[in-house]
Amino acid sequence: MKVVVKADILGRNDTAAAENAALFARHGIYALNLLGSPGAGKTSLLEQTLQELAGDLRVAVVEGDLFTTKDAARIERCGAPVVQINTSGGCHLDAAMVAAALKRLDLDALDLLVIENVGNLVCPAEFALGEDEKAVVLSITEGDDKPLKYPLVFKESAAAVLSKVDILPYTNFDMASARADITALHPGIAIFPVSCQTGEGLADWYAWLRAQVAAKKAGKEVH
Image (tube, rainbow, N blue to C red; front, side, top):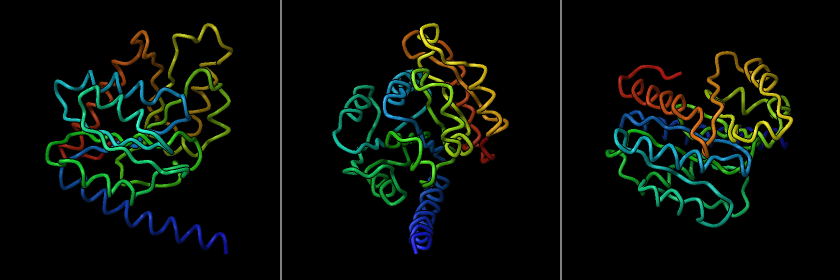
């Protein structure tokens, strides 16, 4: 019975996700589901990204957290429209939550929507939100063993951002091993080692995002 219940939950979620995806398509919005553990650096990455893209792309953010509006406040200070979703203990966002948040945004005024999911490498990977693609943030401090321990999120993601590389010399994180494991799980995935403190690698991440948005606007398949 547990399998049946889970299948029913995922089935209802997929229906709502398809409706969200259709909405994004009608408005020409590229939607990115940003995943990662608590403290991986998702919000810091978003802050840098919003400041960089402000001149040429219209971006909004949906913030997912168990409690508080702290991350939403950080995003708001960057000047981007933001909607906070508090799950009150739930370990992931679902498509219905995102659908409700979208009603509070002017979709005609957007090119890019970033959905920062609840900090978790497990549950969020299982629930589609209607996004075009997922991206996962893995910090150097988490260890290079995480891709093989949490394979689904890396298999499902079009990009992997390896954050906090400025402290790489002070850790035992094996960059070559992490890259090999990630590409073994998802051949062709885009990998971006970055530092939000020094700016290292961020230009490649920005270029990738701009390319994905342009492809969506042109009606091409994003990848």
